[in-house]
Image (cartoon, rainbow, N blue to C red; front, side, top):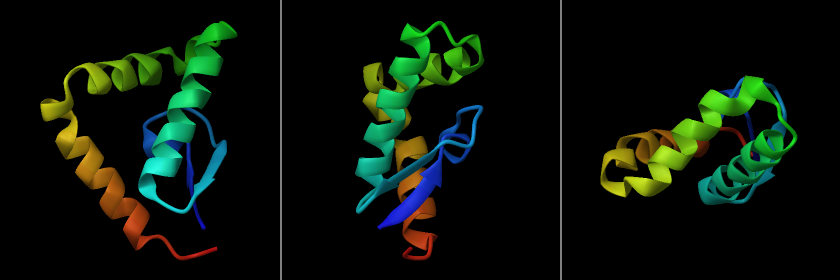
Length: 78
Protein backbone atom coordinates (compact mmCIF):
# COMPACT_ATOMS: atom_id res chain seq x y z
CA UNK A 1 0.00 0.00 0.00
CA UNK A 2 1.34 3.42 -0.95
CA UNK A 3 0.19 6.95 -0.17
CA UNK A 4 -0.03 10.10 -2.29
CA UNK A 5 -1.50 13.38 -1.15
CA UNK A 6 -3.96 15.64 -2.88
CA UNK A 7 -1.12 18.10 -3.49
CA UNK A 8 1.10 15.43 -5.06
CA UNK A 9 -1.76 14.80 -7.49
CA UNK A 10 -2.18 18.48 -8.36
CA UNK A 11 -4.59 19.57 -5.63
CA UNK A 12 -4.27 22.20 -2.91
CA UNK A 13 -4.35 20.14 0.30
CA UNK A 14 -2.47 17.38 2.09
CA UNK A 15 -5.28 14.81 2.33
CA UNK A 16 -3.66 11.38 1.97
CA UNK A 17 -4.97 8.82 -0.51
CA UNK A 18 -3.83 5.22 -0.12
CA UNK A 19 -3.92 2.45 -2.67
CA UNK A 20 -2.28 -0.62 -4.05
CA UNK A 21 -1.93 0.99 -7.48
CA UNK A 22 -1.55 4.45 -8.96
CA UNK A 23 -5.05 4.06 -10.37
CA UNK A 24 -6.39 3.56 -6.82
CA UNK A 25 -5.00 6.90 -5.64
CA UNK A 26 -5.99 8.69 -8.85
CA UNK A 27 -9.56 7.48 -8.42
CA UNK A 28 -9.52 8.49 -4.74
CA UNK A 29 -8.31 11.96 -5.78
CA UNK A 30 -11.10 12.19 -8.33
CA UNK A 31 -13.68 11.35 -5.64
CA UNK A 32 -12.08 13.84 -3.22
CA UNK A 33 -12.19 16.64 -5.79
CA UNK A 34 -15.82 15.86 -6.66
CA UNK A 35 -16.76 15.98 -2.97
CA UNK A 36 -14.87 19.24 -2.45
CA UNK A 37 -16.60 20.79 -5.46
CA UNK A 38 -20.01 19.62 -4.23
CA UNK A 39 -19.27 21.13 -0.81
CA UNK A 40 -18.42 24.47 -2.43
CA UNK A 41 -14.70 24.34 -1.63
CA UNK A 42 -13.28 26.89 -4.05
CA UNK A 43 -9.67 26.01 -3.17
CA UNK A 44 -10.06 22.70 -5.00
CA UNK A 45 -11.81 24.10 -8.07
CA UNK A 46 -8.73 24.49 -10.28
CA UNK A 47 -7.62 20.92 -9.53
CA UNK A 48 -11.15 19.64 -10.18
CA UNK A 49 -11.28 21.48 -13.51
CA UNK A 50 -7.91 20.02 -14.49
CA UNK A 51 -9.08 16.51 -13.53
CA UNK A 52 -12.28 16.87 -15.57
CA UNK A 53 -10.23 18.09 -18.52
CA UNK A 54 -7.95 15.06 -18.29
CA UNK A 55 -10.89 12.65 -18.38
CA UNK A 56 -12.35 14.45 -21.40
CA UNK A 57 -9.06 14.49 -23.35
CA UNK A 58 -7.35 11.18 -22.58
CA UNK A 59 -4.68 11.45 -25.27
CA UNK A 60 -3.48 14.80 -23.95
CA UNK A 61 -3.68 13.49 -20.38
CA UNK A 62 -1.30 10.59 -20.92
CA UNK A 63 1.72 12.68 -19.88
CA UNK A 64 0.15 13.49 -16.51
CA UNK A 65 -0.96 9.89 -16.08
CA UNK A 66 2.46 8.49 -16.97
CA UNK A 67 4.19 10.95 -14.60
CA UNK A 68 1.78 10.10 -11.78
CA UNK A 69 2.25 6.36 -12.28
CA UNK A 70 6.04 6.87 -12.22
CA UNK A 71 5.87 8.96 -9.03
CA UNK A 72 3.68 6.29 -7.43
CA UNK A 73 6.09 3.53 -8.46
CA UNK A 74 8.99 5.39 -6.86
CA UNK A 75 7.21 5.72 -3.49
CA UNK A 76 8.20 3.38 -0.67
CA UNK A 77 5.70 0.77 0.48
CA UNK A 78 4.06 1.82 3.65
